[in-house]
Length: 161
Ligand SMILES: C[C@@]1(CC(=O)O)C2=NC(=C\c3[nH]c(c(CCC(=O)O)c3CC(=O)O)Cc3[nH]c(c(CC(=O)O)c3CCC(=O)O)/C=C3\N/C(=C\2)[C@@H](CCC(=O)O)[C@]3(C)CC(=O)O)/[C@H]1CCC(=O)O
Ligand SMILES: NC(=O)c1ccc[n+]([C@@H]2O[C@H](COP(=O)([O-])OP(=O)(O)OC[C@H]3O[C@@H](n4cnc5c(N)ncnc54)[C@H](O)[C@@H]3O)[C@@H](O)[C@H]2O)c1
Image 1 (tube, rainbow, N blue to C red):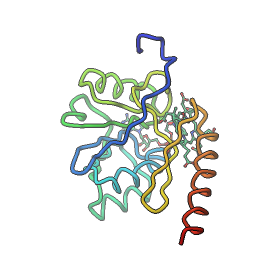
Image 2: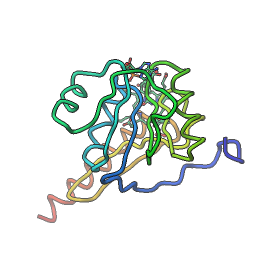
Image 3: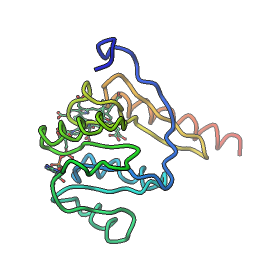
Image 4: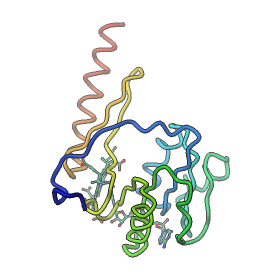
């Protein structure tokens, strides 16, 4: 917990992940939604999960990411620059988050945002302009505002063309 009790707004930044190890623990719906952006950003992604979605299994087969088909163990975060805890097991998410904290690696926790050191924005891109929206733990609002902004950027781009 940060010194202000978690009330300050997060500090927005852009992680440059090319060639850097990112560990995603869990391979279900939430991990599958977030994985494509991480791969596109050039991260060396390792997914740790006993089972993964068909899309993640295909990405692993294609060599786009590494899949360790087992539950999380202490030591799995070694060398990671960024971590996502996205299992459906609160105890596993807690262990991932605690290990990341110990290693001082920023970590998203899909089930308990107030205990995480990073949050995932709703993102979009138009012609090299990236948009990232956080709406104070209101993910549907974040996605709605992202869609509005992408729509505006798209109209501006078409008008300029
Ligand atoms: C924007 C987006 C980005 C992405 O995920 O890529 C995103 N969540 C999305 C969708 C979504 N999230 C949830 C549902 C199902 C329920 C529903 O429909 O409402 C759906 C819809 C779905 O899954 O379809 C439930 C939910 N979300 C969080 C918790 C836990 C908590 O708040 O403690 C729970 C309860 C879990 C539970 O009950 O266990 C937490 C977070 N979710 C965030 C991001 C972070 C900051 C957002 C901000 O500040 O604005 C934050 C704080 C941390 C993080 O996880 O990084 C993405 C839309 C992307 C898009 O549409 O493109
Ligand atoms: N933050 C968000 O945006 C958001 C959105 C929806 C749901 N959630 C929450 O996120 C969590 C994950 O949701 P989901 O829909 O992706 O779940 P899911 O059931 O689709 O996937 C869970 C994954 O976790 C893996 N897993 C289970 N125990 C594990 C362990 N010990 N080590 C490693 N992997 C393990 C499973 O093999 C599976 O791949 C849930 O707590 C859910 O409530 C968060």
